[in-house]
Image (tube, rainbow, N blue to C red; front, side, top):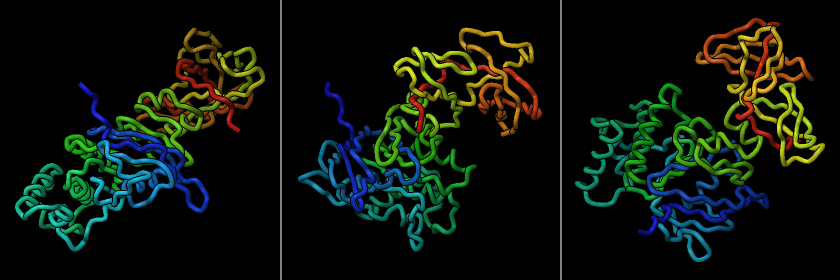
Length: 361
């Protein structure tokens, strides 16, 4: 039994504008029924990559294949309408003069009864039965988003390209609409490439994340792996707030307020950044002011003074000015815990949840 080919394959795609590289040597693949999120900050080349795959922007180098057939390369450059690609953007781009049914049917081939059946099928799938005669201005933002999704899926595209499709929605609607959209996309079996700058959205929707920076994919992997094994300090910081403890490696060890850390692979005298997320910085409530009592997992406790505490609903963030070296660290504490500024507490860190990278310049 042969393994199925990925539905979308992008090989070494590059694009330059005015001599400046906007996308450099991007390669990725997406299987049918899977979602890949192209994640990165604004201006990193995500949307340009999407436009090249769609066929509305021409790459300077590279190849694009859909179901094994080359749609762009040295010998091919199929127009957008011939690629079997669906497009969905953040502004929905619905035709205001057409009804919901007319929007969904736009671009469908076949006779009237075939179009009507497909429109009715999609209206049911996006939970908009009875809305076919309405116009876009009569719909809420979430309803417009579902119409745009139905229109993009109507021709049964092999590949669905989505550029920040949920950014215009109210936060209260976003999670529900995303979940419903994801279920429908998987049911339809399209290979989905979703562009977003929101890590939470990528983690929620993606089977695989491609993290992009300055036109280059710097890391690819499943959400769990890319979150828990970031390739560098910037990757760790893109997914969450981070604390940074700086030090110098000597004999594969780096001294910190929390004791010595193993830093193998770093030359003597090399400056390193030890990264710890706020949720892995622990407050030792039992110790109080009784002094350090090291454990194997948590290492040496360090003392800090509360500078500020903020309640965020599910958790509180507490900023500490550490006794050693003027270091400031932030701890995320579940529930309501708002110590007054000036309160002295002992902190410990989860050594197994720390990352060590060469110091950023």
